[in-house]
Image 1 (cartoon, rainbow, N blue to C red):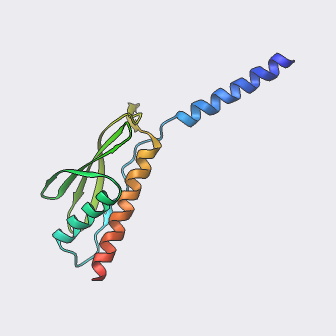
Image 2 (cartoon, helix red, strand yellow):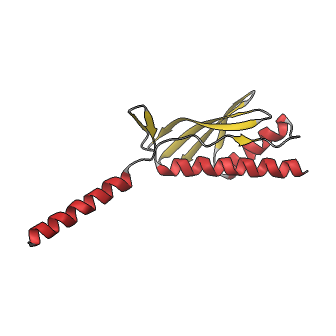
Image 3 (cartoon, rainbow, N blue to C red):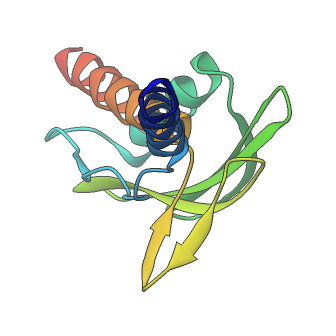
Length: 134
């Protein structure tokens, strides 16, 4: 009876450990709407401000696109931010040490990555709204 009890307890513990380590599906955040009246310069500045505030480094820039990298401990995340006067979109590019994998046509990544880009998207939205007030 004792063996059965400990076997069940061990099985439950292993199941919880495995489920806690499972990486969530990688989804890009919803596009952020650009408030009316902003210029391209304002949108670009607001995006960069959001990135720098959250510890990201702008690693490249071209017309309508900003590349950014986050180096956090042993983790590296790279994103591309596409923007115009209608919307801003954040897309995953690559990562290191963030449990990225593809399986059955779906992409998975460490849950912290999802929080990091969600925070950047929220900051971009807030920055643009504040710029629109001026």
